[in-house]
Image 1 (cartoon, rainbow, N blue to C red):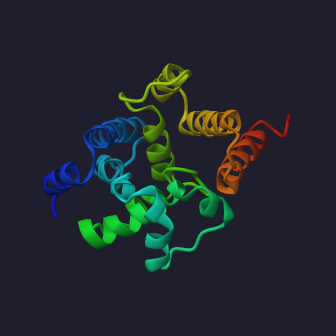
Image 2 (tube, one colour):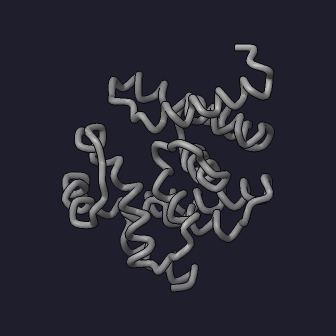
Image 3 (cartoon, one colour):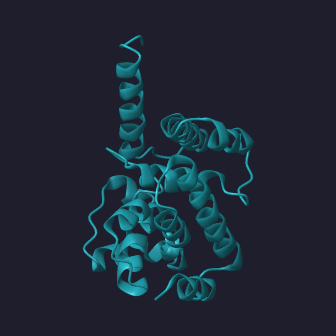
Length: 196
């Protein structure tokens, strides 16, 4: 399947607002890739397909993950919507023909992040948070960071915003999000000579 065929297929599978969000993430990811010297085509592809598993009803996510041998923990058991990210990576490979492991990894990590995030992982994670159709308090600050901050600074801000949002809602915080944020903070401290 080429990119245009993927677009068409996705437009049939996802509801209109989710498809528009996916197109926004693809464009935003391409912009961020250009800004940070990453492969634009890879970023656009990962952005386009990052939510391809959102066509699966939330109540079926665990069964779909089980059927594909995707391992998950108690947080995903309690909040199965989080499984759409690793499921999306499998669907992108199986149904859209994506073989690029870096693209599949970025799709799998776009919701909660994780340890040792690659530059592409960070780009997709952040693009998902602040693409043009997103509207919530603080999103304009994230868009400003996308234009002005380093990749690490903007990812740290995104992870911090995500944790604050989850806390406000009273939901479980995924340990991978905490791990990703802590890694960025520790790396920042090391760069600054451990001034924290």
